[in-house]
Amino acid sequence: MRGYVVALLLLAGAAAAQDNAGLTELDSRDDLRGFEPVGRVDVEGGGFCTGTLIAADLVLTAAHCVLNRDGTPVDAAAITFRAGFSHGASLAEVPVARTIADPAYRNLDPAPFEMVERDVALLQLADPIPSSIISPFTVARPGDGDEVGVVSYAEGREDALSWQRLCKVVGREGKVIAFDCDVSYGSSGAPVFDRKGYRAKIVSIISAGGEDEDGKTISLGMELPELVDRLKAALRKGQALSVAAGKPGASVGLAPSGMPGKPGKRLVMQGESGAATSGGARFVAP
Image 1 (cartoon, rainbow, N blue to C red):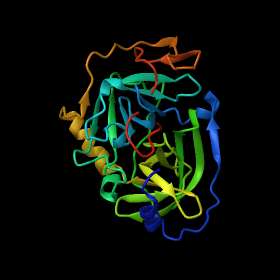
Image 2 (cartoon, one colour):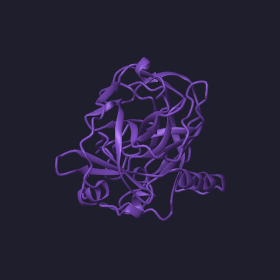
Image 3 (cartoon, helix red, strand yellow):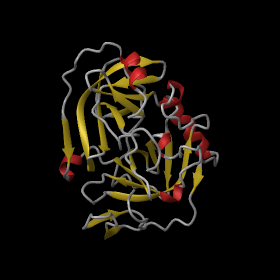
Image 4 (tube, helix red, strand yellow):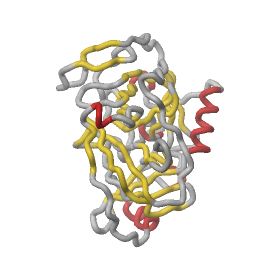
């Protein structure tokens, strides 16, 4: 959370203190019900981000999770999506075949607002996750209200998702949106939900953040639909930031965790890909 305080305060303005909901750890399968599409985006030798399934084979996350600081792409072959990851087990674990981000995006820290609004990436999975196992979330335009919710992993709570049922929009500037949600390193790419209606819809993802003068966390996200549509079209045309080679074929069953210090088993939708670890900046966990 470096270098964002001034910009965040300017965007948030003099927002009044909010009665936000606290964090709830989703540490059981019953707790996870409804949030199964959210998972950890792990990169071998790096940290992790949060990502969300928005189609059977597409995961939405932050662009800075798949781009190194020097502008080179993180190797897609090193990235694994672990849907519903909780205490060493995943509902589905799938390696990434291709990544795509806005070609105008630059991984700068601190990032100007024009980079925050482009800080979106799609991960195309090596094989789709059947809808009978996980039903993807949809992406929507943010409404006029100021109440949202966030589900994320973060440093210090990386073993299970945490849900903040209620936090607030505290400012808008063009396509950039500021929130007072409780997020930290590892929350990059975390979905921001509008929970009105039958099922929650993703209206933004977490890009960056800092603290206001009272020590309260303020984070930045962006509007999604137009950029997500452009990235989907680029993938359909065969464009990609990085393409993995030699991914193992799909398998379903129980396999050893492969997570350092995480004994036990997990349901795997793909072949194993090694220890969990995403590169990048800002809210990427080290």
